[in-house]
Length: 230
Ligand code: C5P
Image (tube, rainbow, N blue to C red; front, top):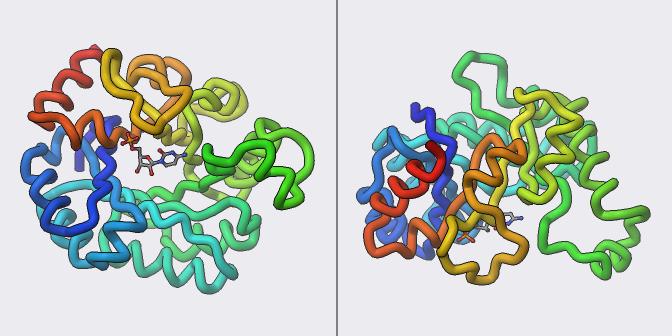
């Protein structure tokens, strides 16, 4: 178990590529995120293997279905030994409560996080699917519902972190992607924050992909980020 606030996004199409990157990192110095592409191509084996290597795994599959189905998926992810997993808050309070019950109450239970609105959702898409009000108000409302439903925190953009932190204690975890160290490439991310800015805004964990995975020396890139936080 690491105490790092850095979660490296393993956005790879094959288990071999993901494992090759993980082999260059230290499980005491970061955690790893496995998302839909890698999981759909490689299945639970890659999760089990990286757990066995000592990594804390955030299984980012954003479950959204009827409560029973989501609860069973969360129970299966718990059995895999993941450290963190997530569900979609738009599935509603009953779905989240049932998911939370499914992961149990042992001291080593996984952390259960909610996705509020995806940061890719703009006002046009928000209106298109018939949601009312503003995007920000909706994110705040869904985060409150996640908290009331027993979830441990939410994924949010670093831009939203300070408003969410103003409404929630430090034990409600804010997981923020869209992080770019100073002087690194933005890629397809907009409105990014540096690691230090995101933590100052109230973020609990930083999801960082390409600034580490695409670096010539991923461990050196990770070390540089750690130093920027000291
Ligand atoms: O390479 P980069 O640092 O942009 O990777 C960010 C990771 O966080 C990717 O896995 C991406 O899917 C994820 N993510 C995101 N924005 C969100 C939610 C998740 O960038 N709103």
